[in-house]
Length: 351
Image 1 (cartoon, rainbow, N blue to C red):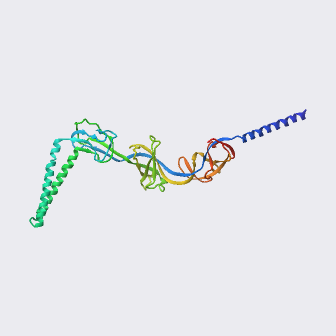
Image 2 (cartoon, rainbow, N blue to C red):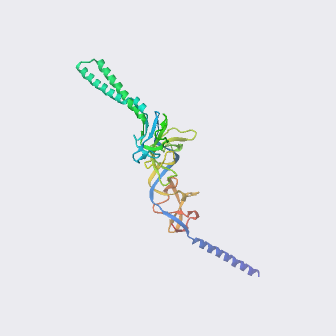
Image 3 (cartoon, rainbow, N blue to C red):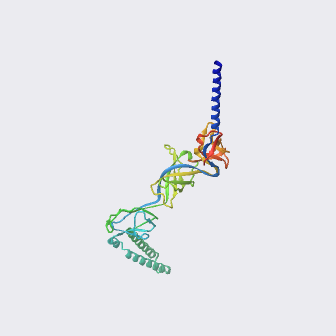
């Protein structure tokens, strides 16, 4: 009876080991689905990221310098009165101020005529002086009279310009306070605000550790959350050599090319400054790299088997990294499904 019991135990043990071996064989045959990517040689850039507010290069507010009746002028390109958002050119007449008493007081015609007379008198004195007909004092007196008359005439013309509100820059109307046509506006009233944001600038603070890497002229890419599909180009124009002891940063200025007017004055933007680049490198996504005790690893597919490969890296940015050692062009790396892999796992490529 005892022998029979031992025999049954031996049979049960053999069955258990047999089942375990079958499970191992079954697991060995499982193919883990993964997505792969073929390695190619391509560009990678390393960036320093910062943020800031963009401001227009040209920003001017035009105010009245006399008290007079206000008349808003027409925009010749649209055929209607000037409005917010209209583009203006340098010299465009935005508004006219009408005060006949003020204009009459300038005596523009009288001053212009007097200048012409003084010019004729000067030429006459110069001719006589060459012939000995007048003294040097008389010639200088005629010259002074002409100079004074010319200054008076020029001042009259300048005073007359106070009745015309013209744009001194190319730009866009960003503020246009409303006044009823013909109503009197006081001296010092704001008539229009114009911004030229075809080119903009951005003041940034940069980490101290990059002071030897960031130089004037380096390329900058700018983005804003309202235009996620577009990037705007810029460049470093100025850098401060001084470090702020409180923030451990240094100041920089970025010039922004905004020819399509995608950025608007006051927008908050992200600026990525290119500090290093390679045009020919093996580049992989950063998120597929595993950190092991022996170093950084990725999985490489060879004839349906996933091999864990130790790699060394170089340049990197937010999403990508250069591989300097451990991978070769045209190899297949696992980019999805690597989390469940172990070395020598069988895989099924699903791309």
